[in-house]
Image (tube, rainbow, N blue to C red; front, top):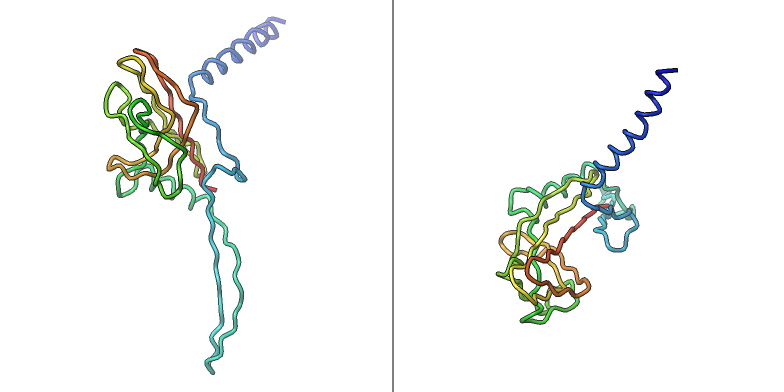
Length: 186
């Protein structure tokens, strides 16, 4: 009977412990494989037979499969590869410039904040497994009326990897803005 009471007391304590641990982990949504917004790997393999007499037989083309190890390799190269890692987060200065929807060619107007607590910063990197990872940081405004609505994920040398437009925010002194990029190679 005493052992049953110990178990009954242990269950709520374990649930509370799990809740507390989970509340300190950043909110990291993992894009699904069919995510429209995720990175999708596309690969094709075409084969043909060249006979001894010089004739060529087209054997067709088929999609290939990106292995989990391959997705992990892409993730590793972007996070820590032989070149500058893509782990810097920048915010567009919408107070003094125009920040608009991003285009794949990165031809839209964009001016990064360079001061006031909103300057480009190296984010923390969280490995979510199987080609999924997050880069996140929190910016804290050092003065009033700072406006932003666009973020870029890039490397330290300002190579732009991706951009995102979000609902415009106006930050006052000591306000914080948390940015969490979650990337999935699938």
